[in-house]
Amino acid sequence: MTDKNVDYIIVGQGLAGSCLALQLLFRQKRVLVIDRVREHAATRVAAGLFNPVTGRQMTMTWLADTLFPYLHSFYVQAELFLQSKFFFPMPLYRPFVSIEEQNEWMGRSSDADYSRYIEALHTNSAFARQVKNPLGGLLLKQCGYIDTTVFSDALRDYLKRKDALLDEDLHEHELKTDKNAVIYRNWRARRIIFCTGEMAKQTSFFSWLPIRPLKGETLTIATNEPVEVIYNRGVYVVPHLWKVGATYTHDTSPSITEVGKVELTDKLNELIAFPYSVVNQQWGFRPTTPDRRPLLGPHPAFEQIVIFNGLGTKGVSLAPYFSEELTRWMENGHPLDQSVDINRYKSLFSKSA
Ligand SMILES: Cc1cc2nc3c(=O)[nH]c(=O)nc-3n(C[C@H](O)[C@H](O)[C@H](O)COP(=O)(O)OP(=O)(O)OC[C@H]3O[C@@H](n4cnc5c(N)ncnc54)[C@H](O)[C@@H]3O)c2cc1C
Image 1 (cartoon, rainbow, N blue to C red):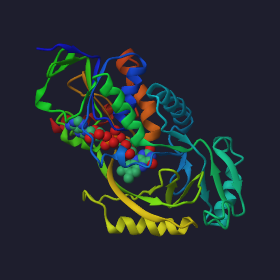
Image 2 (image 1 turned 90 degrees about the horizontal axis):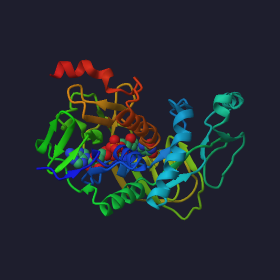
Image 3 (image 1 turned 120 degrees about the horizontal axis):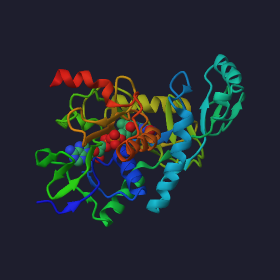
């Protein structure tokens, strides 16, 4: 017997499930979220950084001109909706390591594609009390961080107040489908969306997708230094949260490691000039994909069973925009961008069947 109708059931309340739930709530849709908090879920471990110019080569991230203005308005709207503060735009400073790099950025700074992200280019040491940068560095704008714990907990509290949260794991054997609906216990919905991050492999519907866990470790430090920018070179240091990260390894052990701690502290000591102590260390697995693009769309055999995953190393900047992309598909039939549609991996489903 079903007696509770909702529009959507969302499984998992990390960045993917949270942003999707908000997109639906902004549109007055009725949602049920099923999620059990896991201390080591990527969203709870993440430093929450967003930065449009990334990587060792410092290149513009994919779709930066679309994703970054979008995330700004999304998180501001989310703060208003949830009456909570978790969005902290803030410049990011990256010291130069060679004269060649300094010259290259002097050239790039006149390129319109890059200049809109550059706040200042320093050819001499800046922030010298706090960071080691004898050759100066680049101060980037449109960067900042989300306090992902405050964000997740604020939405969780909202859902609890609306009786829209099941604080437990989904029991897949209790899930039934009919032509136009999914039924879970006494809940009936138009669709169910799996946002279970690196645990997607444990879902029989989507275990065929190539979601690869990429382990990361972070440190939390304590310091009295009044830092107001994010420092980033080898590692990042996020002020206020005082998170330092992250490592990237294919190690599958579910624990922190001494190797991770040494790597992070060595890189931190090369970057910063102020005293600190390490007070915590965390680990988690990022849900990555071979082509580094998110995974969105319906199961090949069940249109009402959907996935939103593959946020990889950039969940903070990808989740807002692509949760809207998925919402527009579910609500208005707007076609999904092929580069994120799970259809691109359909041959893997045929092989698994
Ligand atoms: C160390 C580290 C640092 C990072 N730093 C950053 C950063 O600075 N910036 C950035 O943009 N990204 C960062 N990331 C990546 C980012 O954390 C991820 O892209 C993002 O959090 C993935 O979100 P998700 O919702 O897909 O998965 P998750 O955060 O893993 O959430 C999945 C949720 O689903 C729940 N769940 C799973 N199975 C079930 C089930 N059967 N029933 C009910 N609930 C279930 C889990 O408990 C969890 O709550 C970092 C990741 C790591 C590990």
